[in-house]
Length: 370
Ligand code: TRP
Image (cartoon, rainbow, N blue to C red; front, side):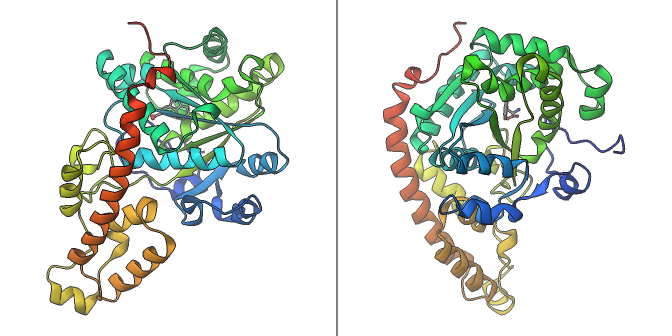
């Protein structure tokens, strides 16, 4: 591998997904769709190519088929509002739980503190909001361990320390480029996040699947190397991973990101604010209605279409919208009316459930005592 080929998990740019295949050796998800179908109806995120790549996911599917124990590990940095990009991860957890897996969901508060410089009171505030949203969406708390990086169990902290002894500075720099102590800590903590369900103390899950965005692949590669090096001591094996496309911002630029309010719709936005954001969202529309009727729209550039694709539309609406838009039969204004209705219905339902859970959220996660 050329040493210049790196992905930055702490950067803000959209990366070129093709590099994952050509440089980093992930496999296309489409080759596994048949195997997924054997387990039941395939979730739209996998069918629609949003979860587009994997490492060793075939082994996870085999384990699920045989009824073996499988753990999902994923994490959220509590660094801003919970938006539709986060919902996409929740939907994958819910789907994998429906296939029999147990989830370990880490709230990456140590990472948020170290690499985003977030004050601790903000971190706690967002943590409660994240956990309540996840449960309100359908993550099953009976099949989930929610925890924070700063207030968990002893064997987890030992694992961070053991991981630190199994990698050199040169190896870490080859993966991440320049590093600071905070980033080294965050990376090794994430290794323990991903590996700890394999320890007997946490249930001895030998099959671990990590659904992440492609920007997290450096952490996955580091973890897989360290898993092998710890194998003789604690029995860890390489975890599997899946990779999803990241949603673009609804303003049409960059990725949907908590740090840019104009880029996201939060699941906790007051409904009229959310609707207003949607009405102003970037579409694939032409300059004038006449032009659009003549040339057709460009759904592949449209952030409303992307909301349909990831979240709001069933297959029928999705394909009808695509075809009608392309053919110039559907104008953006008309389509936005449909999207507003779907968004409103979803948010009304969701926010009702969120409110009920939010008041009792500390039943589900132990918050740090600071
Ligand atoms: N680094 C992840 C992020 O930036 C959060 C995270 C921490 C995580 N631990 C994890 C993700 C373990 C997947 C698995 O959001």
